[in-house]
Length: 177
Image (cartoon, rainbow, N blue to C red):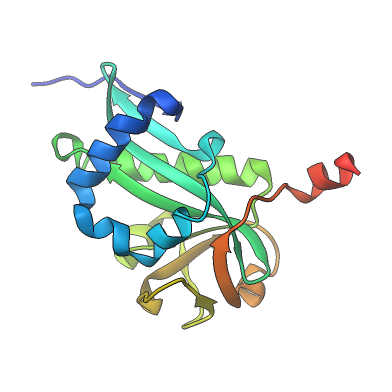
């Protein structure tokens, strides 16, 4: 039996090449035309909220978080989330999502948003966003737009355009003034 030594780490630039390979394995070339990819092209993801999983030193999974403004909510777009085929169905993706959401909460994010499979993500704390509430830069199945609200009144404020926006938590912005 193969033993695993899983370690979860904050992503850094040295992971870029292997993350690209893992995402290509998981999603193929079609990943570049998705609405979520259009948002990610608008600006960089937040490495401090993006994580990898390594098994015996080999990177085998990753999740990225991109800062966004979604309607009137300062949050993060989760994804892509990908696990190498050799390590699927072991809870690695779920753990990466948990770590990323908790890191976003600590940073002051108001919400973690994604376009994904409700049966997979809803047990992880995601809820459906009101049908058609967010306007993506391209077609999206509104039944797959999900959110983990991390602040009061998030659902009521998730109305309008979603796009990349580098933002600071309110407390940091006030301290900088």
